[in-house]
Image (cartoon, rainbow, N blue to C red; front, side, top):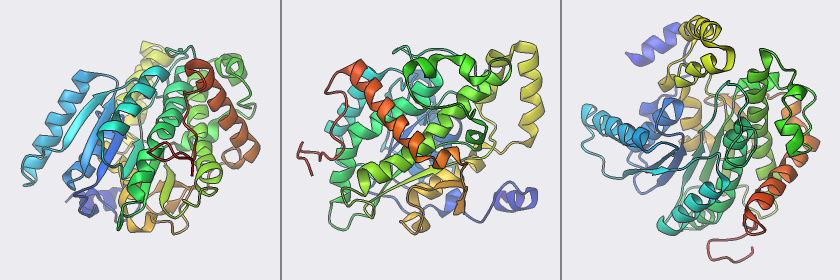
Length: 355
């Protein structure tokens, strides 16, 4: 019934659905932002396919509720009680906390087959993170940059297991990356925290979000070119950026913070009827995490707007100079905040050996 409805309404771009996820028994997945919205649906889909799923989010009470709902889904769909799902609290806007949690996961987990970077701040007003960085940039990009760095040795360990399928890193971006202001250079923290460079006014909140989503795509491209290809891992670890579509999640409630209660409420109830459900919005990300078509068949480092659909990202998202500046700025910020050991060498394995 759901498939038929989506095809009639045009809310599904193709025939891939959560029910198409293959058996993931024996695999481990980490989903940031896994307690609500798109991230929850991704986590639920992977859990129902029998993967071990670790939900990472900022609030423990949200984690408890999410686990309860996933267990209920399993019972409703005849899958029985799931025991291999868990929650870990982490504020992606606090670099010290990200490092602590990532290292904890690296030590306790035997493998990591799928890492989905979904947690994020939606279109909202300017605020700073625990590290004094624009919270959009800090949560949506910088925290995930560090998380991937600290978990990459565990991912390498997994892809080296005989018979293991290629590991996946999926970063959730947005078509709104196209609205990122042309004056973005990723040159310094001062630039990141200077909202005047984003135009100010009602467009400021959108620009903050758009800049962070642009950073997501540039990070994916940089990860492939700077890390995976030099270490001959382009066919062992696949990295894809995705766009979930315009999705009705709790993020629309942030309109009231960004634009004021009256105008924000009007915006929310104007756009929500035209949005996809979180289930529909999860499909591009789940596809990138599990589908055979994602296994390097031209999708490495790509931006996907729907399952198996090339998003043809903006010119800024293809800018190698911007990509290089973002990478350098991200490393500099983390090193400044956490010290010289904040980042692991990008070519280090799980035993500390340099490849």
